[in-house]
Amino acid sequence: MGINYLVFSEEVRKAKDQGQPIVALESTIISHGMPYPENVKTAKIVEEIIRDSGAVPATIAIIEGRIKIGLTNEELEFIATSNRVLKASRRDLPVVIAKGLCASTTVSATMIAAHLAGIKVFVTGGIGGVHKGGPQTFDISADLQELAKTSVAVVCAGAKAILDLPLTLEYLETYGVPVLGFRTEEFPAFYTRESGLKVDYVLADEVEAARVIKTKWDLGLTGGIVIANPIPKEYALDKNYISKVIEEALVEAERLAIKGKGLTPFLLEKVAEITGGKSLRANIELVKNNASVGAKIAVELNKLYS
Ligand code: PSU
Ligand code: MN
Image 1 (cartoon, protein in one colour):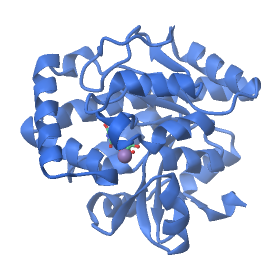
Image 2 (cartoon, helix red, strand yellow):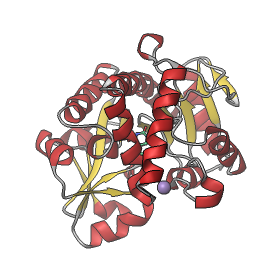
Image 3 (cartoon, helix red, strand yellow):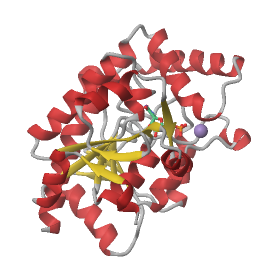
Image 4 (cartoon, protein in one colour):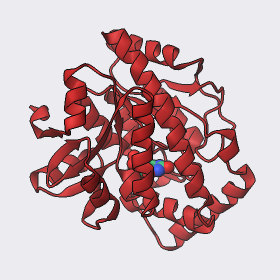
C-alpha cells in the first residue's frame, strides 16, 4: 500500500533490484538547515561519499505529492532553492501528499519513507529532541517518537546544544531507543565532540554497529537506533564559544516568540549568522563524516542480511 506512494530514482531502483546497500538521506537539512548554495553542494558531496564507500545514496523529499526515493540534480536544486518547499514531519505527510504539495522531509518523515522503501540505514547531521523549556512548552521533536517506533538506524553527530540534551536522552531511554557512541563514550553535541553526557554503549566499528542493528530487529524490538558519531576533532568548535552563540540565538527566538516547526530552522540560521559561517563549516564536515560511517554500516548490514 504505502509503497504505491513512492517513486524510486533509476539509481536506487537498480540498487534495490541488485540487493546493494542503500543509505537514506533527509532533505530538511537542505531546505531549512543550510543556506544556498552550500546546501546543494553539500548534498551532492555527501551522496558521492556514500557511493565511494560502496553504498547507494537515496535522498528523500516530496515533490508534487510523490515521495521521491533518490533525487535528480534538478530536484535537489529545487529543494535547495524554492520557497514552495514545506518542512514535513510525520503529521504533515498525508496532507502534503494528498494535496500534491512539495516538502523536504525531517528525520521523522525520512525514517517513515526509508522504512516504506526498505532502507535500513539513514544518515543525517543531528536529530531533533526535547527543546530547552520543553517541560513547559511541550516542544519535543517528532523525531523522538519516530525513533521509538520506526525501524531505521540513524547515524548522526548527536543533537545540537540548542536542545535540552539530558532530557532528550531520558526520553530516548524511556522509549527503548538505544543510543550508541561510535568510538566514543560521550553523547556528542553536534558542533562539539563532548556534551558531558554518556552514551549507553560504545560501538567499536561498523561491523559491530551492523550486528547490534540486526539483533534488535531480529528480537522483534521495532524502532530506531541512534548511532552517535562525533564531529572530527579538526572541525569541532570551541565549547564555550558555541554555548554563548546558542544562548544568544535562544534569547532572540524568545524575544520574537518563535514556536513550533519554525523554531529549529530559526535557531540553525541564527547560529550560522552569529558565527559568520563557522557553524556551517562544522555542520558540513560532520555530515560528510556521518555519510562515510553510515555507508560502511549499510555495507556490513547488507552482508548480514544476504
Ligand atoms: N538539527 C540539525 N539540523 C537540522 C535539523 C535538526 O542540526 O537540519 C532538522 C532535521 O530535519 C530534524 C528537524 O528532523 O530539523 C527537527 O525539527 P523539529 O525540531 O521541528 O522537530
Ligand atoms: Mn518542535
